[in-house]
Length: 168
Image (cartoon, rainbow, N blue to C red; front, side):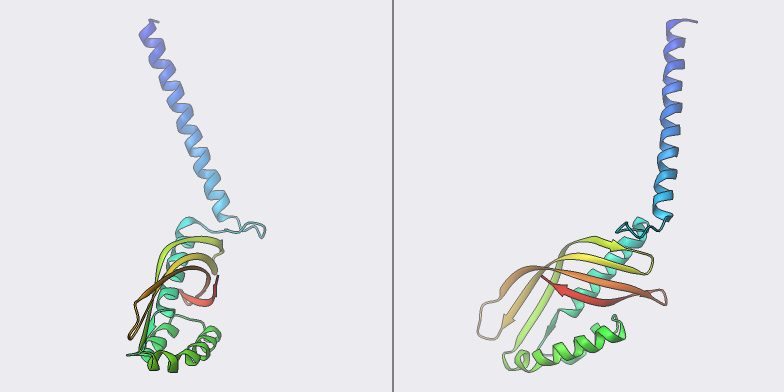
């Protein structure tokens, strides 16, 4: 066997070992993602927790964005993506702000500028959201305030529904 043949055989053996390691790693990842362990904060695959985080971000952005012109319609639309209990709490909270928003001609827009998973299971995801809040009032310069929130969504009939928002 010539030196060129030995190098080829050696490279083939190394390639086979690397392929075997990749297969073992993929199986290990699948095993971790399919195992529900109460001590692990994320017990589902990436697609599931990303879908939950995306739903939490979108619903939170809608829930925290409203203005004086169509305040009630925006609140109604936001509650369609919430659990019944959280929708009731949200309506009580926004009702307290409604008169002030209308009197001061205030518009508030919240944008999610970053997000990540905190905990995730097949039926519940808590996301850390980084938010920018833009507030405009008649006669005042607009302001931008960065803050963060923990948003929790739960699966209900194949949909993610907002169950809680904790601002920080």
